[in-house]
Each structure stands twice: as structure tokens, then as C-alpha cells.
Length: 359
Image 1 (cartoon, one colour):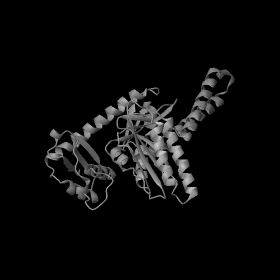
Image 2 (tube, rainbow, N blue to C red):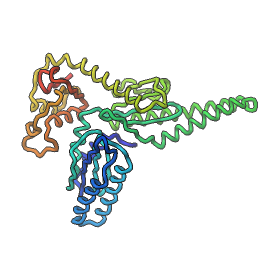
Image 3 (cartoon, rainbow, N blue to C red):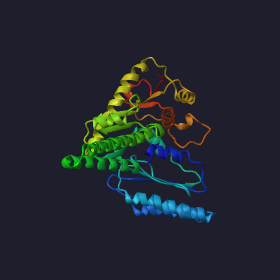
Image 4 (cartoon, rainbow, N blue to C red):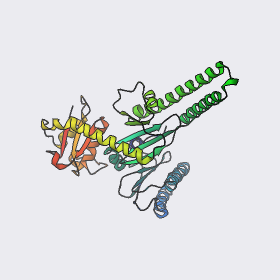
């Protein structure tokens, strides 16, 4: 199954060192929907210089094949107002578009450097979205106020095709019912019911995958009856949201509007739930918050951060070579990894730039 951008970048961050690794950040301005051939040429040129010194011919060829694939992904897509992340080794070929303006960089060494992208993704909510009915299925991913389509899985396409065939058979029998016995009508209806069960089970398996394996919030839209059938057994999952009454042909703009409203409402609920506790919370220094986050906690933490606030990452880990200069990045990542929430608020709403709540 296709992973969400957040999960894919996190997996890159966990990759062990390779014989050769290329990480490139290629920003795309709003007015330019593609990366220029000149900039892609710079990536190839740096890669070839490194490959010329590589002792293993087979690994070098594998690297070139993966680089060609990653670059083809960039040239075939048209995205702007963001940054392409290319991550290539002899065994990895990734090209991910991120809706953030990240500094341009081409790095070649033995380890991938996806942490700037990972920290940017930690700061926003990544949501998996499904819009479906008995006629169609559409999957999306929501990142930083942007909606990205995700391919429909072959097993879902097959289950939907079987459902269409079973429904068509019922419609044909209904039209010409005099020449069919009641037995054939019942068989057709039974086949339709079985196809519908198979379809909803397949959709449920996809939703379960994103909830449990990707650990992503999921929003489902479409027909109320079908939504509740797919969500059967998952009603108590706080990461699952159902929004009924959305037409199957809804434009991406309408879907985006509903997701924006949902996330805004969710943020307001969290703020109303936890903000009153700040009046009774002891102020912590960044170092104290970091220490607390290294321990096992009784519940998922909630971190309030003043908008625009930053401090040197070396204040938290002074003796280490760190993949970020901003200490807020490290705190946000630690909270997210513990399943917690991060709320960025205006300065006037917080007594201190950083405030931690342990529910």
C-alpha cells in the first residue's frame, strides 16, 4: 500500500548508512510548476562525480537507475510552492514533494539527510482521506493545507468492479423479470450483497492499515450508510472521523474546505480542553521539557508553542552533531513520537514560549 509522505520520510530518517547516498532539496517557486533541467543537471553532475570514485560497478549502476527513476518522478509531476526531496542510494529511489519552502541543498555522503523534511512534517498534521460510494473510490493525503491524490489499490478496484457487475445484473433482471424465475432474482440479489460485503471489507482493511500501520488520522467522506459500515468496529478510535453527505463527485476544493474546517475545529477542541490547565502548570525550561519527554509518560503530552519561537538545538544536546539548528524541532518531534499534540498559539495567549501539559 502507498505510504503517506510523513511515514516515507520518517523511514528514510531511520535508514542505515549506505555505500553512497544522495539527498537533494529542490525548492519550486509558486510561478514555476516544474524543476528546471539545469537544476536537475546539477544533481546528476554531483552524483556522477561521486560515482566516478565508487569501487563497486554494480552498485554504481543501481544508483544511476534509482536516480533516473527519482528524477523522472520530478519531471512528470507539476507541483509548485514547495520543495522536492530526492533520496537515492543503490537500493532506494524516493522523490517526494513537500508543501514547504526548504533551502536548496544537494548532499552526497553515506547517510541520507531527510531531517529538515521530517521536522517540517512534524509541525503539521498529515491526514489520510477517503471519499467513496458504491460508484467510486478516491484517496487523498492532506499536508500543510494541501490535498494530494493517492492511487487506489488494485484490490479496491477489483472489489468495486465486482460490485458494479453484481448491481448491473440485478438491474437487467429487474427490467426483464418475466423471463426469470424468482430463484434467479434471489441469486442475483445474493451476489450483490456478497459483492457489497467484499467491497466494504476491502475498504475497511485499507482504513485499518492507515490507522494502525501508518498511525495517521483518517477522515472518511461519502454515503452515510457505507461510511458507518466501513467504520464498523472502529467507532471508538479517536483518530477516525466520518463526514457524511459529501457527494462522490465532490471537487478537491470542496474536500479541502471540509478538511480545513475539521482540523480547525479539532484544534479548537484541543485548545479548549487543555488550555485551562496552563494556569496551574509549572513553567518548564526547554531542557526540563526535553528531559521529561525522554522518560515514559503516563499519557500523551500536549506541547504549547509560541508562534515564531525558536532556540538553539545545542541547548538540549550540546555535545552532539544535530540534524537541526532549532531546538523547537527536537521538542515537537519528541512529542509527536509519543503520540502527543502540538499547538502553536500567538504570543499573547501564552505566559511562556513553551508550556507542557501532561493530562
